[in-house]
Image 1: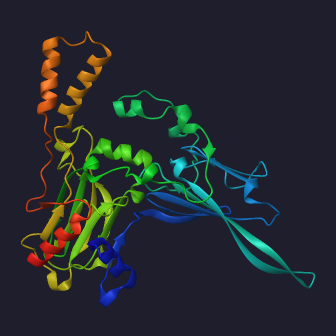
Image 2: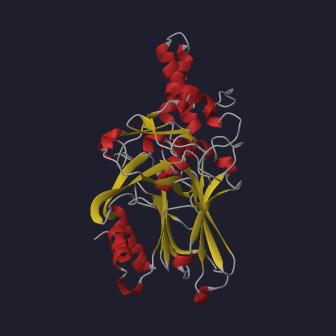
Image 3: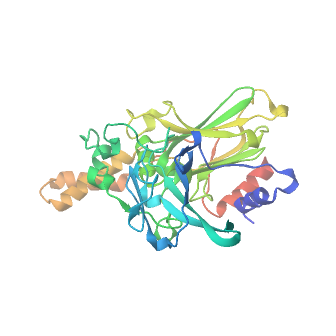
Length: 387
């Protein structure tokens, strides 16, 4: 049994009083609301709608659900369903939204006779396009929805974004769960695609573990997947694991605490932090970090000499990627236009490409490089025994 299977087994069965806090959802405010017949609940990554439908003789095929990044359209037999059509308060990822019908058998009295019928409830899961709370479900301002406006591309990231026509195009929302992974079971992202640093802060009663991201890389990831479906963390009394949900076998960080914490009091959230902005591809962009706050156990209150008794960390992003990109781009351009580089310049670029070796950002002080895949279990077993 690998360390991950062992951990999940403890979580599922609660063996010997082991307490695990599995962090998956980011709380939003307000957490819920109601607009007409539609009830909604939200987290920072999703908006879930529930609406009872009037009894009728219809099938799932009679229901058409479409969405754009800023609009929702629900038709039943080609007629708009009241309360389920309009401009949304925020933006969504239409290809990751989904819906279903819930049918419950019930009985009612009709002229003294019990008559069987079905209560039909419409459920819609909207994947948010930005990590934020919505104050309400529908966009109520008189101005045009921001996502439907055209604008000038001030940055390369804005220029690479979808056009206004693409953002406002209504596409079919699938029934059931949409696909989240790449074809063939590949991973969309790895920790070293996104992370530039990991650090900690502590006071007498708590310790905060922060994972710092490259702003542009995180922005690309959020256009594809909500952060709630990208990030995950598991907290035990004496250890913590932070990882990408698509690749739990290769955590961003796996660490044994240098004391004990209360797992169920653990909280997490996204925050801004400028400490490692100089490691970003664009140092002018604000720094973003995942912050996990661990409340120290009463027997471990006080300043810990060091945060971790053992810390294994995944490799971080490349810090000399720009050098590789510049050389590769120059050679690609020269291949398209043979007159672009002189023979001497071409030879120099080829030499620089051959001599290039990766340089990554430094791990936390005292952290050890995390081995990948099955080797991780053996490494943890040996390190734990040594500790």
